[in-house]
Image 1 (tube, rainbow, N blue to C red):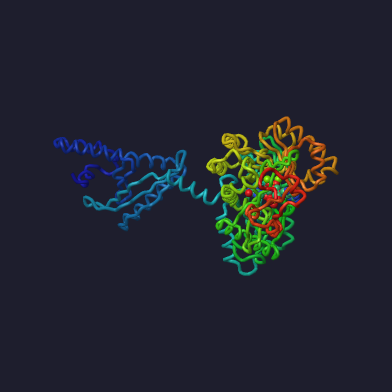
Image 2: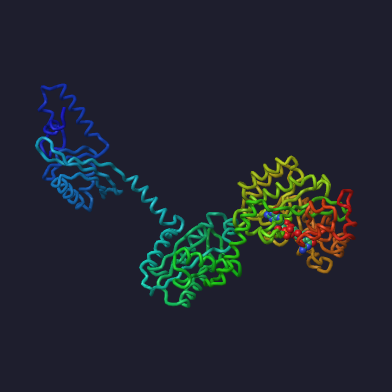
Length: 599
Ligand code: C2E
Ligand code: MG
Ligand code: MG
């Protein structure tokens, strides 16, 4: 059966098939075929219409009828006329087209993709139009579009938007325009997140965005470029003073307390500012220089603002050099360990050793961890570095046993940031197990790891306990925790920070604190060890006035390189970079153990 015949059975304007039925009485098989075809046509999920040269509908199935019905009753009824005009034009021109049509009406907007095709059938010029509902796809595309250009949390434009805006300002600048780019970064946002939880952190960011956005002009843009970082475009500007005043005002406003989830949260923000054209001629350069200025504030007093200047650039370059060197050093595994004994001050026996990482720089000079640990943590290189330290311990185990005894504990330092991260600590625990002597290990972490809300205490600690690895609280007394926080901590050892031990015999206040820590740790079953013991007087005080059993410090030994001990002359080791030294002869004698460390 041909379509022309099928079509010819209908009179124009009758958009159903009843009329056709009477004409086909004597063609029963033809009729049943036709009826199937009609039903199929009627029930097609796509809307199909056929229009004649006057724009009148010759045919229309249910889906199309429903859509047109909606359009006809919508307040914007003119959309039907517009569609009719378009169709007539296509018919006249004999042109096919695929058009996106949106139909308002009812609850939601419907978006259709309609393919119009002019055809000549039964001597008539007709337009066949078939529509697919793409509303869902459009909504999804819109969502994608929004998430590319708008930040979901704060509703602010994203980095792309501000970058695009700055670039177009630069493109059309005739040499007169001036604007400022400010880089805002919340101070200690990680602590806020750790302490109050992520939902409060999120709410804080949204509130901050609101506060900063309050007094902006239409031509300014505030955008959130990542985590707790915002970039603010102030355009146009008259002078640096004007910008400085506005930024001071924003800083002030951000310092006022936030009330979130029944908590009163105090936050501060560091801001760096760069000016166009003085500090750069591209978005990237301006943003980077604002970032550099912000970094200067972060490293100083925080919660303040600074304008970029050339000295900052030199500083940033130097930092980048260190960063580069550190990456190379990790790649080339140019790390080694120095070991410092932990000594029983009653028996002079070595109870354990602490592995302290060292870096051999480009010139072969040995660098102490203070020059690179924070940077390595910041750059995400610390995990790799910790695995290198472990590998170094495994490699040196025979020497460790020979030097300090085969039953000593071996302490390793783990940064607080790592300690709360199961993705690092899981594999790290496995690596310790794989050494074959997990029970000899002790992990030193600072108090922060225990007091911030991370997985450390509940998830990670048990993992290590199962292996027989012990846990030590490093640098105790200078972190965030209070003495009462100790009660919630399950650790095996507590290392009292050097700042309490230095001249302890002359400082009654420190003595008091020491006694408090001592009795608390005793009640909680933790061993106490004094860090940074340097003098005989300090030792004598600990022995006479406290029950502290262990100490570590230059008095007994500086951290030493084990290969140096292997070298024939003890003098050779003293020559190394000043960081390594052998204990002075008189002190060496005083803690000789029945091992090979006695010389
Ligand atoms: P820490 O774990 O508290 O280690 C003790 C630090 O005090 C060591 O400094 C040690 O050399 C120094 N020290 C020991 N006795 C005395 C003394 O009597 N007087 C003085 N003035 N200092 C003494 P070092 O080796 O420079 O390490 C500094 C910090 O770097 C360590 O403090 C630790 O927090 C970190 N660190 C070292 N190795 C690693 C590591 O492998 N991973 C991580 N994450 N951090 C490490
Ligand atoms: Mg330590
Ligand atoms: Mg320490």
